[in-house]
Structure formats: C-alpha cells, structure tokens
Length: 253
Length: 253
Image (cartoon, rainbow over all chains, first blue to last red; front, side, top):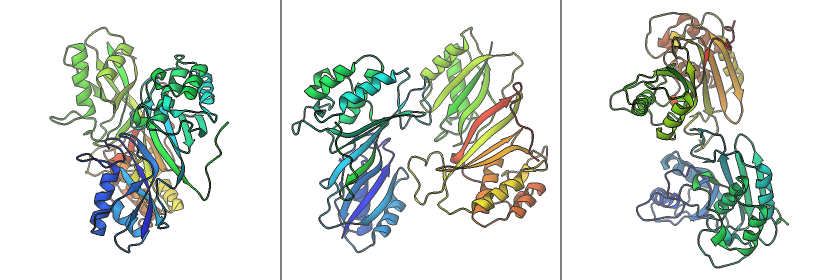
C-alpha cells in the first residue's frame, strides 16, 4: 500500500532532505523510522531535495508501507518517534502509480528577510537578516525582470547544470509585513535557484544591481555575473502542487 | 555612567536570567561581556529573574559602565559578541538612581499555546502544545475569576512564599489568533505565578476546573489544590513598565 505523507520541518541543524551517511537528514530519519515501525527496510521518496538548513511546511513524500496500517496510524506512529522539529502533518492512501517527485506539477517556496537594524532572536532561525533600507521599488522592478516565459534559472543556480533552459516562474509575489517575504511558484527549480534569485533581488534593493541587469541574467543564464545566493535558513518549501486539482497557476508573462 | 539596556532573548537552552556557576544564563553572559568590553568586572542588574527556558522581548537591566563609551556603542559592542539568541534592542543613559528592578512599576508577560492537533515545528520553541478543543468560554470565565483586587498569587506559585498576599493583575487579556495567547500585566508576580495561572486556565478550558474553583484558589492562596503550572517555553517577558511615563494601567476590579 502506497502512502503519501506531508511533512513540516525546522531545517536548522538538519543536513537537508536527502539521505547521507553519518548525517541527520529528513529522508534518513524517516526511512529509519518507517523501517522500524513496519519492521522492514523501506525507501521514502520526497518531492523536493531541500538543502541543508532549508525548512518545509509542506514537503511531500511517498513510501510503500510494509504492513496494512492505515495512513493515520502511520502518521501517529511516526510523530511519536520523530523529533519535535519534524512533523507528519498529513497522511493518506495514494495510487500505486503516484510518485511524490515525478507527479509534482510545481512547487511554492517562501523566502523571508528580517530587515530590522537588530536581528530579532525570534526570527533568526527563519529569516535572513539584512539590516538595510532596501529600495522596494527596485526590488519590485527586479522581480518583474524575473517574470516572463524566458527565465533561464542557470544564472542563479550555483553550479552549471544541463537541462532545460527555460524554467519560467508561475508566480512571484512580494509581501511587506513585519518581514519582507518572497513567494516563488514554478514547475521546477534548479538547485539554489530560489536563493540565487533572492540574492539578486536584495542586491537590487541595495542599489547594487539594476532591473536591466537582472533581466540580462535571467535571459542569458550566465551565472558568472550573478550576485551571491541568499543563505538557506530564510527558505521554506511551502507546498508541492499536484494535478488534479490543477492548482498551479499558469506561467507568468 | 549608568546604562539602561533592553534585551530580547530566545530562552531555549538558557538557564534563565540569574547568574549561576557553570550554567549559561543571560545575566552571566552579559556580565562576562560587559566586563570584557569595559575591561573591569561589572555587575548587571535585571528587572525580572526569568526562569530557565523563558523568553524575553523586553527584559530591562542596568549597569555602571566602567568607561565613557556611549550607550549605542555599548549596544554595538555587546551585540557583536553575544550569541544570535540574545540581542540588546535598546540602550540609553540612565539616572544614577535608576535601578532596573526596584524602579519597575510593573511587568507584562505573554503566554502562548499551540492548540492544533499536531504541534507545528515552527511554534514548538515558543508555544505550549495543548492538542485539545478548549472551551474558550470556560477559559474566559476562569480569567474573570483571576481579575479583581483580591488575587492571592500564592495559589499559583510553586513554592510557599512569604510577602504580600494581594498582588492583583492590572490587565489580563486573551487573544484567539492562529495561537491562543494570554497577556498578564501586574505590579509584581510571584515566581511561577503566571505559569500557574495559565495551568489553571487550561484546566478550565479542558473542563477539569470551574471558574468558581479558580476564584476559590485566587482568594485563598492555597496552592495545594492548584493544577500543575504550564511549561516555561510558552512564556515571554514582553515589557517592563517604569514611571514616568506611567503606562501601567490601574489594577482590575
């Protein structure tokens, strides 16, 4: 029986999603516990390989349960064993064909900045501290340069990657609350691309990069000229989108 | 020169405010750093002896600076050395007669509950997880029983304490947001009294204690019959009130 689970985690101190020898990762911890509860080694497949220090409110994964426990029983059993920083927030039966990563139609990531002069100790785990008066009009102009069908994320990824060049965003919103919050929704993201785009937007807000320069980066895919990516702890995987219900907006532009 | 500082801290992992041998406390860390920066052993006096695991947004303290550095320079120097979980959020000159604890006219504490069925990993540091459908009318009736001039906090403190019997609250509010939040303002609080009152209000919400029983406890000061206090990590010292500006409301009732 295939089980689909939704997982929230505080990534502080974790080495990310993907199983690694001798390192605490979400996949590693989950596989160990699913194996222990079900009494059989079991692989857990995640939708997104979040990096070390990145958080998740809505990571999705699936596994083939080695017994006939109901999904809610799996949820209870795993939550009883998991550290408080990792919670199974949903569990359900899935079609035997369902694959958390392959079936994903898109993902939404949030990135948060604490722009106050003195970093709040209560936000330090979740926000990048940028104690600067950012020019928000310039940030918005930079975001506009990232929207559109021709975005080549390779300019913002930290390693040269082969593959599709155009991975447009389906949505990019900026919210100015107590913190400055970016939301990126797209079909797929290259590794580090969200953090790279945030790094570029913050550089725009600091007057170090113009919207035209961001547009050039976005079209060229040339990472040599991109500013440093934002640190991992401001990033959170908010949601993985599946069809149906087709809740992924159309690409921008 | 006397310096008044306002301090925010994430109390997770700290042994509270008060200096102790071989334990990380806010006072201990601050005294070590003020001494290092000023090159002379210096005592730091806090307004509230917050307990192990309790947080602060607005703890206040004073010290006599061993040099002529301006308060803002003290703030910068200390923030450069403090761990990210402790921040000096304000610093100013104080009258030589000012004493952070003796001059305090009152304090406001906040207590937060996460009442969702599955504890959020993002609230676990700041909220007591109470996965129950609390009867909010009963919680409000219990709070009403705590308001009034005759509150004897000894029923809610975990140790018998001598001293004044009537320590009324100046304000007690309940806010229902994504979390359930209590705010207690009073001239002074016995040790553990806020956590004891929260323990009683949660017991009321669970149907384990009536408002009349809370009123009896509040009048009698008899701690033998009080429910267990709430855990420390939901508690935060929000603000210490000083006169002027006389911002402490009149006692309730």
